[in-house]
Figure 1 (cartoon, rainbow, N blue to C red):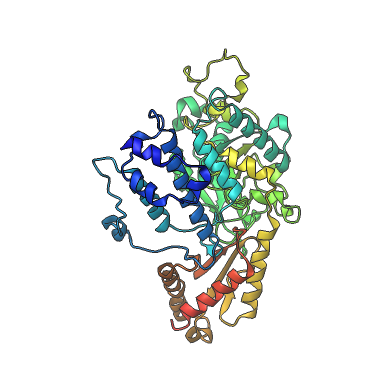
Figure 2: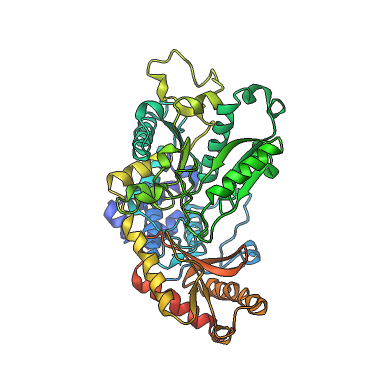
Length: 508
């Protein structure tokens, strides 16, 4: 059967991509298995055939992703996926499946997922599908190496050094004093930032543990990312020792409140060691006053915008910076870096000098063996897709025109009301159905308004034509949170979203 499969696949790449011999391939791949692929003897042609079929599936999905007429998702409840859908069975068989079945599974996996690159997907901060970044991710998966030593990732480790140097320069740090590492997501980068901040003040923590420390506390705005509390829990600091600082009406940390909180903590015998500022908060997109406070969350990509980089004035005074290119810069998930102003601090904090990896007498410059700067051993190559996109000149400013368009629509509308004026890519607003629009603000009206966004979102998910998020915040009842970070989004998509909200909500 394997010989018959290989013979059927011996055609030109062009023929396979067009799937001219589709019927033959269907028949023969049904009789072919993973054991027939490389490194199996005579597996080269079958491997090429199988992978080109996979590429066809991916290209079809990409085309549908950018088609505004296509649905964002084909929604099913969890129990439906568990029970199986039209031959798509998530249960694992005790016997190997054919290559043809694996191709069907690939198609169905994409079919029942969410097209996060769709122009009308506004649900999350990370959206869009950058083709250059996608190519970088494909190459990275093909290389399938680990970032801990130059020995096994020579190009990627040097590439990481080049990118970190460039990012530190943009922040305003000199090459001789700065350092950094790419990590698996912004939450882990934030954890690294807190980890090195604690080590900087209390290096004895590494060997002797928390018992030798005073009661340390850190400060973050009440609009800060929840990963700060998670990091405090994981590092043994405790969530009770994360002090949330009050924000103003725009969601920015109030410096006077920060100072008051620090003094109160000191009077209680607590020892402040870290302040986390946010540049582009998750909900409102707010920028804390960085000249007064020291760390940053997800808005680092704005540094690449000549028009808007002033919002990050003062970032050069931070001791560490979390920069998430997988958000505003549109790099495919995941891509995050923790940058530190003091060179060597990451290594001193985390290194364990495992002798089977980090030998001091290697034939090359061991400064490029970066793995001991991290908590991880295995580390995915997240740097190449960013490097490739950077060479292709990533643009930022056009993304920021979207909020202004929606802002204008809200101001012109009688049924949409801004939660607050947008500062960044986030636009937060309420939709008032006709029955609520003319009712004065009151507790009773807010209780009714609280129900509107969830009901509209539920209908959106079922119909699958558009997606955006909602949430309450403080004394503000549920509102829509629309995030502009997809370069495929056009004004017509914004207009479509508003029309859909009105269509789905007018009778609520």
